[in-house]
Image 1: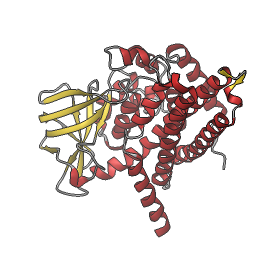
Image 2: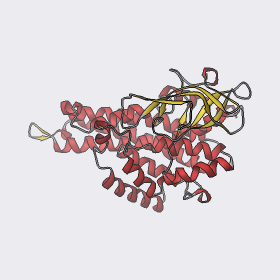
Image 3: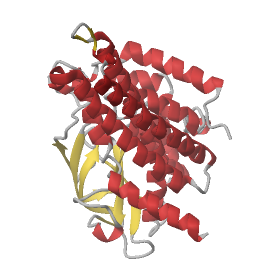
Image 4: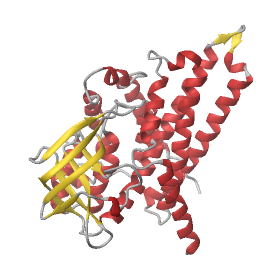
Length: 372
């Protein structure tokens, strides 16, 4: 079975790489990191104009109706440049929630805006430390009134609406609801993280207006499906970042001389680069499996998503760390760009659940497969 991307998808990659090389050159995240803006609004507008936010949205809702394979290609290229935009929250999570569980009216109201980049969505799940579960939920939504606190919410300070996971006394213990974030009863407070180029917020709901998204008591199963789909896309973003970190380390090692020769010729540096390459290659292989399962809606998706997610977390963190080490003392300085991959690797490693969470899901998926 050939998991490689097609010629058309690789052409999309070339176009994406060219666009990002022009609009998001190396170190572009520094302007957001050192400034007051929560994200690069001009870059996000350009991404929307390219149609990337509309990739998997059906044409009848203003989208392009492409497959998830094209979205995987885009995710990898965005990860490669550490793009400081709310793409993942809006496209991987909010859009997917509407596609999976939204009513016709909800889709008509929000999908065209998401496709055009005129609206930003997010997904509000976590409330406290530890692995999220239905019995840990405190947020409630009764008769269109949402009350509770979500923390942290990626891009919660800039999003126009949130898909909120709330507790439910029936079914699987949770329900999803859709809440506009500019309504009365919603308070948003920015939260500092290791990677300020991707903003986060605490969102307090005090009898805020909300509407059901999907059937009551089916929210946890929907959440699992949404996260499985998002995990594959996050994994591709992490693989893109891991490969960029490897390339950055290799380029520096080839050009940095010590004792009359490039440090790339020293065995210790060779081992670092080789280990990075091995981890990145394994993660990419698992991501191909995830991309296939996502694009075909295969029954193996939970297994493929968890496998891709775990290996991508490990590969990106390792590559970002070893990239800094390869740069030596200068790698730790503010002026060098190594920090951007390290910051993003740490952030993405917990963005939709920690490595331990996805390891647990991987074990559960393997056991479920063995049982059948």
